[in-house]
Image (cartoon, rainbow, N blue to C red; front, top):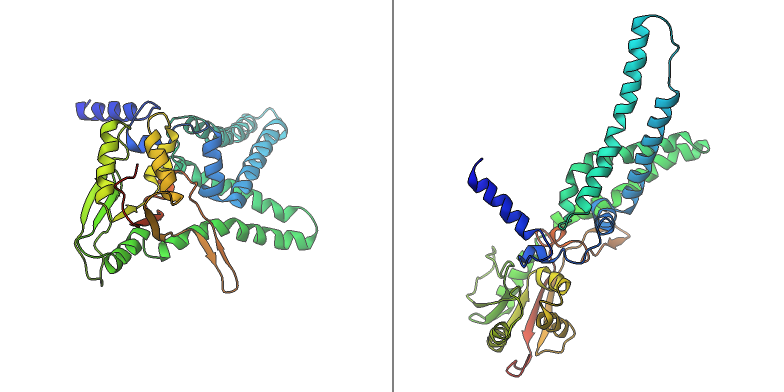
Length: 329
């Protein structure tokens, strides 16, 4: 086996545990097994309506399969072909149980790992679609005629609200592009920008805007808090004209390890509450939304797991110095 492959596996194992200080791993501390993944799946992965139909369809599929396995026996004769048909039909029904069993076991396994990224459940989505379809189709067989006619269509539309809303984020410019345009148009050239370690530093190059040159200072936010780090942070903040947070990587994950980052937790708290000498002057979001002619429904997803937002629609915040930070924390 290629030693590089084995080395990569060892590295992945080392960063996938609560003791790791690897920045992308910090966010998974203090997350509840099963429940954390289940909530993210229901709220952001599928949407509540789609999720409910998925659960109902999976239960319906399982119950019907078990019942058919027990009772679905054709008439028995002495012919070998009939016996083969009985065995084949029974095995076919039993085999179907592999689907809900595998979906359940995979979910339980992945949701109890340290890393519970929503995208790690992508293998299950084709099955979710089938289960939801089973539940919606079942509406055609219950209730009065008007219910059988309209309920499936209404259920389908309701289930699609969240997927359509999520797709809307791809109809708008990326938030980091929006923020970069604002920076080049509003922040004077040669200004000093404090950006975060392990995040995408802004501004990025954008079209149709006169690009300006800036000095960037990288705040070591993911280093373990120490006197050396605090001195470095103070030095950077004393020089900075602006602080730019291009996602929630830092302030979203760092509070999960309070024993390692007491200074940084207090720093973010003071920054957001206006207790520092920096004030927020711009914020850029691209939340999923359902925008109809007469109605606009926005779905803030700041509480989703980090990997769900920071790549394609992160919240970007820009803070401007008010007076000075020489005596700041």
